[in-house]
Length: 179
Image (tube, rainbow, N blue to C red):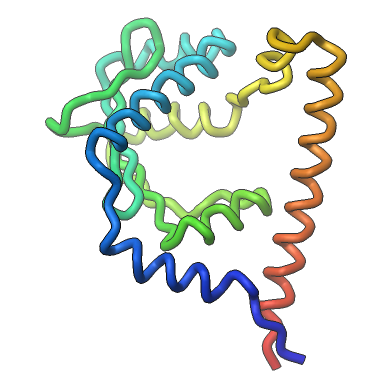
């Protein structure tokens, strides 16, 4: 029996319309600034990550997906800042075509396909960060609501994430089985 993905037509419509829709430049810049603040917040929770990045001070990585990109420079403190479009040491291109595919892959715990070009040593440090640095959302939440409620909310979120991964993995398996 052939089963259709209920989100396939929505993803197709988004992909067709996304070529014409562009967010305003001020919104893109604001989102980039917020992302840099978040990345630095996560890095500050991991002193070893900051030490490793400090050794790459001045290096610039360009992260790109479709028509969107941003360049991040490593500061002497081991944090990130936005860099102007004046060249880069490392290019990281996310190959996922649609945000729905990226979301599905991330929900399944699968890393999106990427293409990396540039300095090998810098790429190794960035890969180490991706593999070892995680945001401790429960710790941040405990500062707002206390330890016990934060732990309960985190457990609920992890349970929801597991259910979403099972659903996404099951849907991908059913859609891949065509007679």
